[in-house]
Length: 219
Image (cartoon, rainbow, N blue to C red; front, side, top):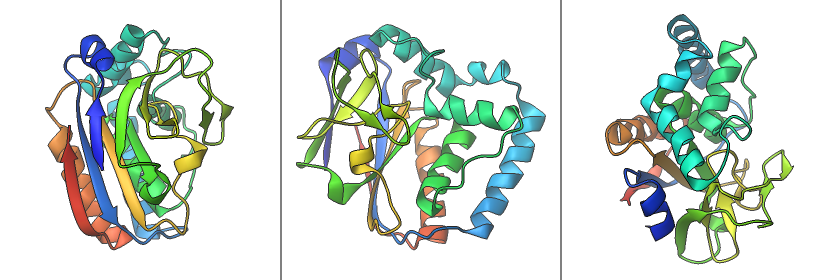
């Protein structure tokens, strides 16, 4: 899979850097050891941050700024990492989806990066391009229905948009029978911290999803 960054994103977000993880995986409905990790991080997170202070996390702050530069209000359409963190800090339990999605959410909360998780077998074509959403561009967010992605960073395959920092698309979502994962870590704050987040995800994928044939894609 080739991943490209459009000139419009480079101009709006010159610091952007990304790492994608490709791997063969085995998903499961639930992993108690993984949720023990999530619960521990949740406790630590509530001791460290407030709903106001999370905006100062470099990765979250940079993603919010990227939204503004691309033309979107990050307070109306929150990046997923911020939404997850705010949910924890408001005392609301995280959704339990499946092991792959739960694992990606753990990395997102820990790092502050919005992370796209896709079933690679559902992606059309052999490349993704990161651009900016257009007016009336069709997009169905997972569990959200039609999503207005105008002015929002969006990854597109040969058929259209599959991922934004707010929500991935129903068309390429991970499911229990997914065996090929493509996870994209979006560093609107630059390269610092990206490698650490990717390595942490790889460790979790090996431990909880029997990951094999792992590949890192830098772009």
